[in-house]
Length: 241
Image (cartoon, rainbow, N blue to C red; front, side):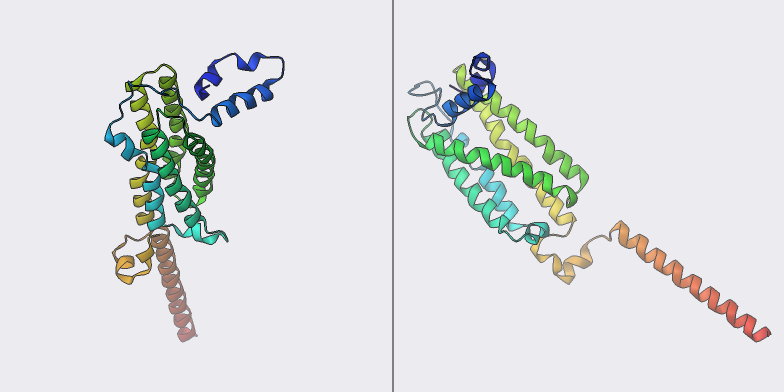
């Protein structure tokens, strides 16, 4: 049974309870070695469908190359773990969704088993970045999460309906979500100066000054002028005396 079928069917209305029904439904989908296009001769996937299966891998490679400093403040090698999981997910997605889509294979189980924790990790990573990225970057990243879920469910519905064109469209939209955040991450890291070469003097000099730095320098300059003015008044008083 497909996941979208689980959500739309009356499987939750049995006498054994909601959670047991849910567990039965999800396990039936999670450990299923086939898809709804099993042995279908109508499913012809374009080459770019296979390329987009590596979208998550592309995203984590970009994140690894421009790893932000807040990733390095933890005791765990988070950047390396994300890179490893992303590369594994790309390979499994390509094998399951492109190479073995109409075949009976355990690769479908491995793909689902890795995709679920990867999505959970991605959610926590976005939430954790709240204190380290700009507000607009955080809002866009958060909005991508329910959008990705919507695309995934629409893709599942297209599978159930044996709608080849609908499946290709919605599944590609699901895989495009990670790619849409790539330029967002690059711009964010460059603006905040968190590239590896941000310590270079030439790069620091070329960056526009931060608003906090301008306010601080003005306050220090104002304080310095006030001190000079007070010193001059004291000198004048001592001379008159």
